[in-house]
Length: 358
Ligand SMILES: Nc1ncnc2c1ncn2[C@@H]1O[C@H](COP(=O)(O)OP(=O)(O)OP(=O)(O)O)[C@@H](O)[C@H]1O
Ligand SMILES: [Mg+2]
Image (cartoon, rainbow, N blue to C red):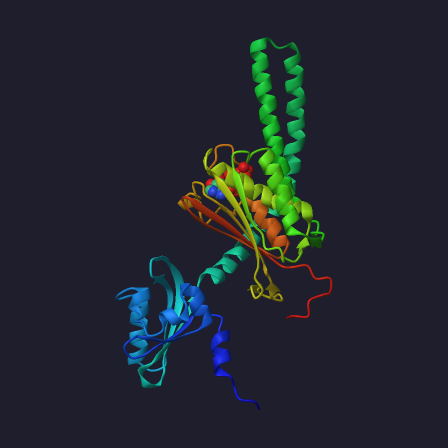
């Protein structure tokens, strides 16, 4: 058997890993650690831990604790700061090595959480599906009756009363539109899959947005030209981005509003669904706006149906988005603070041969 290349293993560990000596000076950092800190290995080696993660940090505690004991110390959901960057949630694993050295592994919480929550969106969207078509059907018929009656009334009404009949008809139209949107959930046909160039979808959605509801927005693109096709349905994906652009356009100011579209190829991102094969989701699309941000109280529920902060909103936009993305085998997540809202979508790529991966 050939000699094990520990250097290569160290470099291949996908989580940020650090080795500290007994005075908590950094002895080694792997490449994920470099990426985590956006700091080069050379800049980190020989420096004390607090220089990057702060004095008396939870990380320092965990490392000291591991050094005192035997085996390893694990701490979940710890906020890890790096120089002046906002802290990020991580699980920490610290192991005592020989000679007082400690190995520290960071396990970012972001992706695991996103996947958990994304699976919940999937079922939330499904639970609406059953009721939707029934409800839509039940509303459509009486609505047509009311509309007909209002038209009859309007024919003989005074000008004053005509205003009222017009109001009835306008509101009927609004309910009609709502029913139409609800009905889209009831559409249980399997998603037709064909190779779709996501940049074509994004461009089309952007053009129609610019011609209408997002005329006041400035769009910025940062496309990865090597992006492979997604397996999906062009029109459904178009709806996804139209909904996201519409929300962004409604959140940004009339002047100075920017919507950024970024695409990237990130091999190695996988989603594990209980009882199913794991899916590879290497296509990343980020839609960012500099608007008001999602109201904090809604942040956990925006993908649920009928959740809206707008007086004329149905709250179905994002619910439909999450259903379509789920039907495409992808995930969507939102990260929002006032002034910066990011919707991140991960999708599988098109393969014309069935995947051999398990
Ligand atoms: N880019 C964004 N910036 C700020 N808040 C957002 C953004 N996108 C969504 N939201 C919040 O999420 C809520 C739900 O969005 P969703 O698209 O599902 O419904 P809606 O926009 O209110 O209604 P509709 O889509 O029917 O017009 C919104 O009401 C808003 O509070
Ligand atoms: Mg919306």
